Amino acid sequence: MTELQTVPRQPLPDGWEALVEQSRAVRQHAYAPFSNFQVGAALQVEGGEVFSGCNVENSSYGLTICAERSAAVAAVSAGFRDFRAISISLSGSPVPCGACRQFLYEFNPNLLCLLDRIGDSEPPVCARLNDLLPGGFHLSN
Ligand code: THU
Image (tube, rainbow, N blue to C red):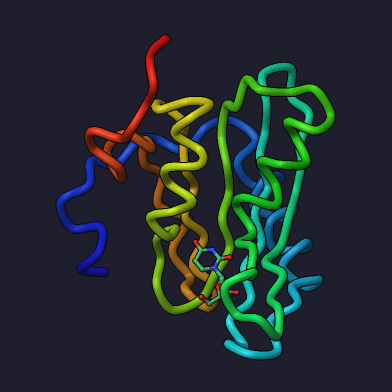
C-alpha cells in the first residue's frame, strides 16, 4: 500500500464496523459503467447521523461525481456540516482523490478517514484528512 506509507495511522473509532458496513452497502448503488470502479462513502456527523453516497458517472465524463462528494452534499443539504468521520469503500487504490480531499477539508481538516479496501482482509486504515492533504486550501474571511 505505497500510497499510505508516510501517512500516520489513527486508532479506529468506536462503532467503525457499522460505518464501514454502510459505505459498503451504498457502494452497491454506484453508477460506474465507464470506469467499472465502484466507490461507497458513509459520512458520520457530530450527533451520530450518517449520510452516504456513491459515485455517479456520466457519458460526459467530466460530470462524474465521486462517492465522498455525494455523501458530503447529502449531509450539508440536510443541514449537517460538522463532519466527524468518513468511511470510504473501494478496491484498488486505497485513497480518496485529491478533489474529494479538498472538498471534505472545507468542513473538517481533521476529519477521520476510514479507508476500507474491498477484498483486503485487514481492517480499514484510519487517517486524519490533514495528513492525507497537508496544507489544504481554505479561504479565511
Ligand atoms: N471515485 C470516487 O468516487 N472517489 C474517489 O475518491 C476516487 C474516484 C470514482 C470516480 C469515478 O466514477 C471512478 O471512481 C473512477 O475514477
